[in-house]
Length: 381
Ligand SMILES: Cc1cc2nc3c(=O)[nH]c(=O)nc-3n(C[C@H](O)[C@H](O)[C@H](O)COP(=O)(O)OP(=O)(O)OC[C@H]3O[C@@H](n4cnc5c(N)ncnc54)[C@H](O)[C@@H]3O)c2cc1C
Image 1: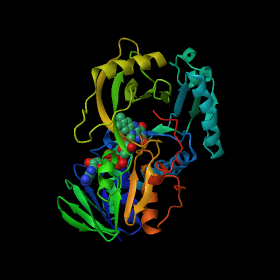
Image 2: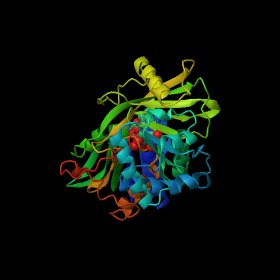
Image 3: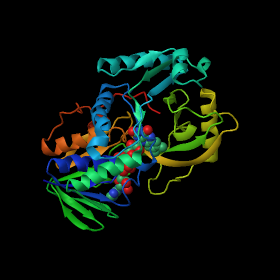
Image 4: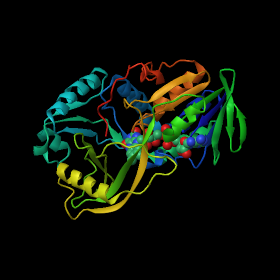
C-alpha cells in the first residue's frame, strides 16, 4: 500500500507512523520543515474535558498514547498533568458545565464540578469572587509539542517511512475517480492513498480534488510571562471561558498566557504576522490579572508568537475518506496537537480497513455542514 501524506505537522507524522507500523509504504511531503505549521506554535494542552462525546473519545484514544509515549518513542515530552480548570462567569456557561461534566463522567473521565472556592484550592491565586462555577479534571495537562513531534517523526523514520522536507504538493493526480498520486516540486509520486494533513492549508489541498472544505485559518497569540508572583507548577491550565483568556504554568514560575478576544478573521497561512500585537498582549495580561492574582503590574513579557488554528464551523475535525483514495484529517479547531495520536490511528484504519473502529467518527464527515448535522463543541479556548 503506497500512501502520500501532505503535511509534516503532528497529524501528518502521527498518521505516517501508524501507517508505516502496519506495513504501508509512506512518504510524507512537507513543503517547509516538519512542525513549521501550527504544531510548533501550540500551547501543548492535552485534556478530556470536552463537551461532545466524539471529542472526549478522541481524547481518550489519544491519552493511551500520551501516557505511554516516553516508553514507545523513547522520548521525554515533558508530559505533566496538573489538570485543566474551566471557569464560568455567566450563568449560561455554568449550566453548560454541568452538561459537559455529565458527558465526560459517562465516559469515565474523572472531571468534577467545583465551586469557585474549591477551584481556588487548585489555583491558589484565583480571584474566585469573579466566577460562578468551575470544572476540573486531574488527568488533563500538557506536553511539549516540539518534543512530541520529534518523537513521532523519529518513530516514523525508524518504521521505514520517508519524510521529504522542502517538497510541496502542487496537485493531486486522479484517474477516473480514484486518486493515483501527487505532483510535487520534487516530481511525481504514485500512491494508492493521499492524506490531507495540511493544517491551515487543508482547504487548498482539498481543492486539488474539487472539494471545498469549510476549514478557516484563524490567528491565535501566546506570550510567555514572568508574573509578578510566580505561578506554581501545580496550578492547572486555567481557562476563563467567558473572556476567552487562559494561562498555564511554565518552568520556574513563568506562565504561558493566551486567549482570543475579538471576532475571528480568516488569515492567509502564507502571509500572516507571526509576532504578537502590542494591543493583544496588553489585553491578554489584563484578562489574566482579572482571573488570578499572579499577574500584577510588575509582570514582564519574555517573548510571544502567533500561529494558526484551522477552524471548522462546529469546532470538530473532518476525518474521513472523502473521495476514493483521498483521506482528510483536518480542521482540528485548536485541538489537533492532543488529538493527533488517535487521528493517526484512525487514518491508518481508513486506509487499511476502509472504515474506523477506534472512535465512532461517523459524525466527522465533511458533508455534515451542508446537511446541517453539526454538533457544536463549547469548551473551546
Ligand atoms: C497559539 C496556538 C495554541 C494552540 N494550543 C493547542 C493546545 O493547547 N492543544 C492542542 O491540541 N492544540 C493546540 N493548538 C492547535 C494545534 O497546534 C494544531 O491543531 C495542530 O498543530 C495541527 O497539526 P497539523 O499537523 O494538522 O497541522 P500543521 O502543524 O499546521 O502542519 C501542516 C503542515 O502542512 C504543510 N503543508 C501545507 N501545504 C503543503 C503542501 N502543499 N505540500 C506539502 N506540505 C504542505 C505545512 O508546511 C505544515 O507544516 C494551538 C495552536 C495555536 C496556533
